[in-house]
Amino acid sequence: MAAAEPIVATEILDEELIERVQQSDRAAFDILYERYFPRVSGYVRRRVDNRADVEEIVQDVFINVFTSLDSFRGEAPFAAWVLGISRYTIAGRFKKKQHKMVPLDGTHHEDENEMSFADQQREPSPLEHYECRERISELETTARTRLTLDQWQLVELHHVKNHSVRQMASDLDRSEDSIKSNLYRARKLLLAR
Image (cartoon, rainbow, N blue to C red; front, side, top):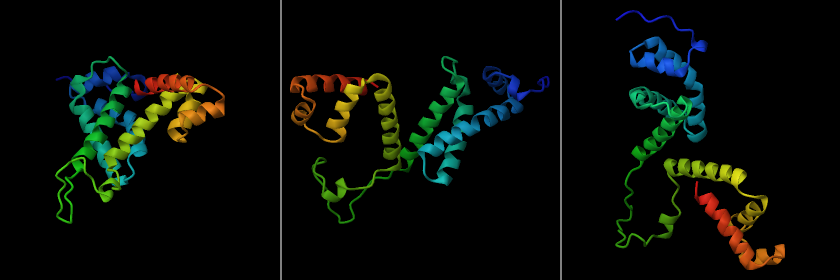
C-alpha cells in the first residue's frame, strides 16, 4: 500500500477523512478524533455527572464511531451522526449498570402494580435522569418553536402550576371548552416530538 499524502487538518472535509480512515490511515483517524473530541466530551459532560464515567463514555463513543464508520451513509452531517452515537452510548452505558432490585425485607409483591411507599420513593437511575433531561430538552425546544404564547401559557398553568381547567377559564375569562381545546392542540404538538 502506498503511503498516504500528508493531511492538513483544517483543509480536509470529514467525508475524505472517513474514506481515509476506512483505508487504515492512522493520521486521518487522529484528525477526526481531535476534531470531534471537544464536541463529544462536552455533550457527554452535560449529561453525566461523574467525571470517571464521562471519560469512559467518551472513549466508548469513539470506539463505537470508528467501529461503525462503514454504516455512515452521509445522509446527515457527520457531526449529527457522531452525537447520535454519543447519545446511544450514554443510554447503553446506564442500561448495563442497572441491576435487578431485590427487597431486603424478603417480601415479594405478587402484583407488579402493587408497590410500597418506599418503592415509589426510590431515586431515579442515571439512565432515568438522562432520559428525563433529554425529554425535557426536546419538550422545551418544541414549546419554543411550535407553541403559541397562548398555548404555552395554558400548558404552564395546567401542567406545571396544576391549575384546573375551570380555574383557568375563570382567571382568563374564557370558556372551559376553549381552554380544553387549546390544551389538546398544545399537547398534541408536544407529544408529536
